[in-house]
Image (tube, rainbow, N blue to C red; front, side, top):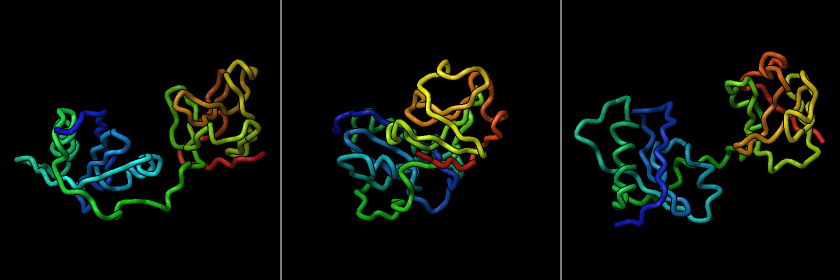
Length: 187
C-alpha cells in the first residue's frame, strides 16, 4: 500500500491518443495523473522531491479520445485508494520542458467578469511594478475601490496571479485585451 495523499487528475491533452506517454507524478507527496506532455513541468520544477512513473495499466476498452475517463481516472482512483502506482519508474526526462518560462507575460484567460488574467505570479513582482498592455500603462492596486470608476489597473487576484481590471468596467472591451496579448512589466 502507498500512503494516500492528494490525487490530482489532470487532463489538458491537446495531443490525446498520440505518442505522448501516460504518467504519474509524485511531487512532495501529492499525486498527479495525466499526459506526459509538459503539463506537470511547473509542478516538477517547484517541488522539493519528485518521482514519476509511466502508466502500464490498460483498461479493457481504451477509446482513442477519452483517456481522461478510460485511463487517467481509474489510475487516479487506484492511487486515492492507496494502491501503488501501476507502472514503471521513469528514468528519462523526455517530457520535461526546461525552456518553458516560470511565468507567462501575456493574457492567459478572460474571466466572466471580463477581467484579464495574466500568467504572472503577483508575488514575484515588486510593489512598484506597472504593466503596459495594449498600449495602456497600468498601476498596481490592492482592490477595485482604490481606483475611481472606469479606471484601469492591475491587482493580485485570488489565485495569486496578476490580473488586469477596470473598476466598474470591462477590461477586455475597454482596453482591447484578449488571450495572447503581451504584457510588459515596467518599473
